[in-house]
Image 1 (cartoon, rainbow, N blue to C red):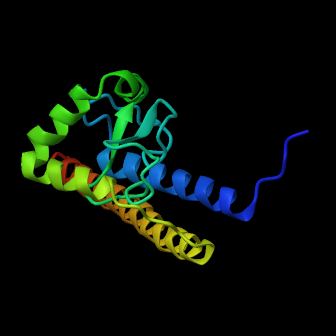
Image 2 (cartoon, rainbow, N blue to C red):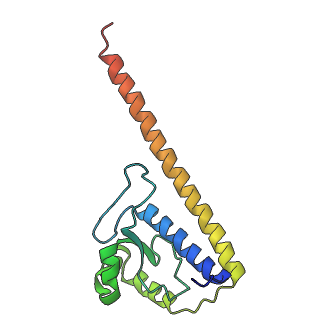
Image 3 (tube, helix red, strand yellow):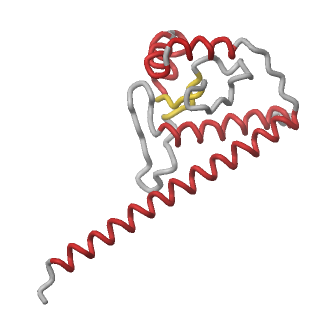
Length: 165
């Protein structure tokens, strides 16, 4: 029988999950190779082969849930994320190419900072990130609905211009 998780362990798992969803939705595919696996039925739901990749290890709680565009978390396919365990160079090279050596060095320094989260801080962070994710999903759905409405309008205009009146 599995041991019941402590409140803190569950909060960390929940934060990992919501950040992974945010990163996959934000980046839309692997930042290194471009792999994308959008579900046909729901474009806001990503397949499990995309992961939240960390430039610097998740052990660094100061950056573990860093969703800044030039931060520690970016979408990676499973293969690139797995390779990063034994060979960090390709991911580091991508990051430096995208954000620059100075930003990389600053992020590296941030990764060395100790951050001890209290449970109430983890809860607050989870609430904040859940709101961000919900807003992203709503925005994505509105964008899809807007495109669908535009296509319908265009379709009706095309049909009307070719009607036999």
